[in-house]
Length: 110
Length: 111
Image (cartoon, rainbow over all chains, first blue to last red; front, side):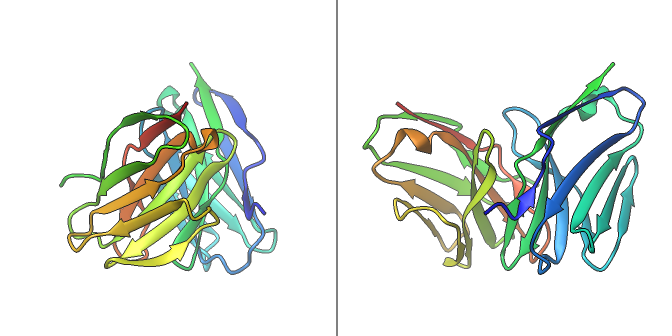
């Protein structure tokens, strides 16, 4: 039972344009959500987070939106840069653990 | 400060063998979690340790076990290895309920 889903395995975006990565979840008890970025041969690195009591959080080029009624969150990257090319995981927090999605591979084309 | 350190980085084992992976968390981090990453499955939660106690456990068979020492270092053991255990094993540490800091992982290949 996949409680956190990233339905797009891959996404290609032109440099300078917006990248939108999506994540859906099923458990309304999740209280905290995060996005991680992962390069090959490295561990995931924390990108941005959002509490379930908020609907938006911004950090530079990265913005995360949370729609609790739809159980959906998204990560916007504006403008996209070639260095953003990586696998992005969303994760939801529930009682001492994070449940991760399967990841979306973002490729930013120069 | 030093990050999360996992050893070894790469490991090749034969079916039926056992393996022990090691993780040293960031200094001061008492919570250590282990995840398994396989293609198409994302990161699957194995277990979390806090102050030498297992606080939570994922849906993995009993062949997967772990422990944490008084200095917060953690080990993960997999016994009777199967081909399907080939994966990247990630360790992460954190303070409180903040997000994780991950290590670079141990790539285990079972042949």
